[in-house]
Length: 174
Image (cartoon, rainbow, N blue to C red):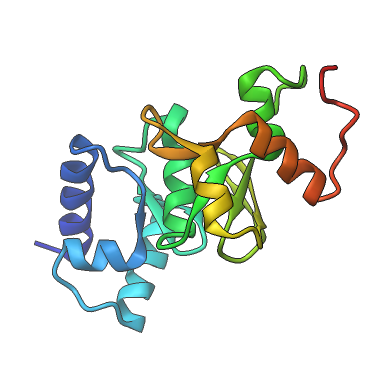
């Protein structure tokens, strides 16, 4: 079986098991290949042929069995900043809780213990903002959103993050 066919088969199996979004290294592992320049070239060729889609740098999905659109952006967050604490905060969380009336349509604001950065994806823009707050003050103010498998800030933490980042406080319902 050709490598591309093995990849499509592995992606189809993974999408049935709550997958859909994978890093390049995960894809190599899934089909028993080494993560080499040749493998990266194969992924690039797959993107050019429309077999797979690059949703962010080093993160892919199958075009035949794409991720569930309502949760894909959260899966991308977890792939982009794997191994560090990430949580939805700032405007995204305050909109989610109804503490601001604005609804963010195409942007997800995430606090991270990793690097700051902005990523444009087919599912919207992900904005990572680094926090220097100690884990001991952050973790007690988080809860896991089971639907999207990512932590969310309490309203108090989201407001504190908004202030710490010198963001627009005028939108807070008062």
